[in-house]
Amino acid sequence: MIELLGCGYRYIHPHGLLIDRPQGSGDYAFVFFRNRSEVTVGQRRTVCERNSYILFGPSTPHSYRESELPFINDWFHCVGDGMRDFLDELRFPLDTLLPATDPSLISRSVMELHRIRKSGGPLQARIIDTEIRSLLLKLSNLQELPLTGKKGRYYRQLSELRDEIYYSPQRRYTVDLLASRLNLSKSYFQHLYKELFGCSVVTDIINGRLEYAKYLLRSTAYSVSAIAAMCGYEHDTHFMRQFKKFVGVSPGRYKAGV
Figure 1 (tube, rainbow, N blue to C red):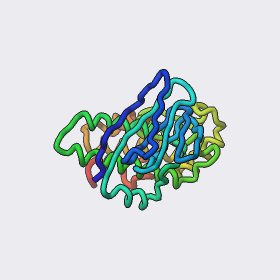
Figure 2 (figure 1 turned 45 degrees about the vertical axis):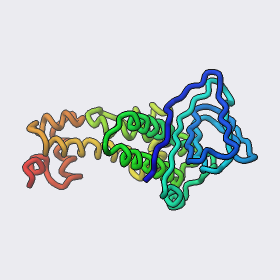
Figure 3 (figure 1 turned 30 degrees about the vertical axis):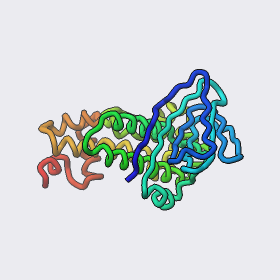
Figure 4 (figure 1 turned 180 degrees about the vertical axis):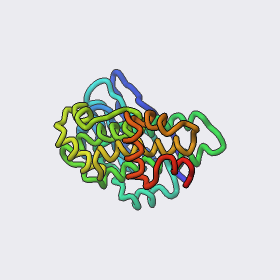
C-alpha cells in the first residue's frame, strides 16, 4: 500500500523558496511547478516551464527553486513497498521533468489528497493509496496519447469543454459556438476534437443528452415531453426520433422497461 507522508496544495512563496536535498528525500517526492522554476537533478540543472511536474526517486539528489516570483507549487511525498513495481509497470519516468498536459488534473488530485489527509476515518489509508495510484495511472495514460503540437496545446480546454457537454445536457450547444470559445475555426475544431476523443463533438452532444434522458426516464416520474425539454430538445418529436435511433426503442418503451 502507498502511504502519504505529507502534501501541500497551491503553496505560495512570495519571496521564493530553495529546496535542497543532496542525498535525496528518502521517499518519492512529487512536485508540480505552477510557474517557471529551476530544477537540478544530480548535476543537471534545468529551467522548467510553468505547469511541469516531476517525481523524484528516494535517493536522487535534487534541488529546486523559483525562476520567477512568486514561487507556487503543489507537492506530496509517499512511500510504499510496491511503489517501485507499480512505477515500472506504468513505465513512469522518475527524475524527469514532464509537461502537464492537463494541469487541473494534478491540482484536483493533490487538493483531494490534502482533504482526505485532514478528514481521517477508518478507510483513509486505502483511499489515499487509491488516489495516488489513480493520479499516476492518469498521468501515464496521458503520456501514451499522441498529444504533440496543437493537439497537446488544446487538450485541457477540449477536455473541460467535453466535461461541460456531459454535465450540462440541457444546454443547446452548436459547433460554431463551441469552436468560437476556443478561437478556432469550425472545421479545425471538429478535426481536433475527433482526433483527441475518437468521435465528433455532435456525437458527444447527443450522447450526453440521451444518457441523461435514460437516467430521467428510469428514475423519475417526469413525462417524456418534460424530459425532452430538460435534455435540451426544442421539440418532442426530435427527441423521440433521436432516442429511438440511438437507443433502439422509443422513450416510452424504455421508461416502461420493455
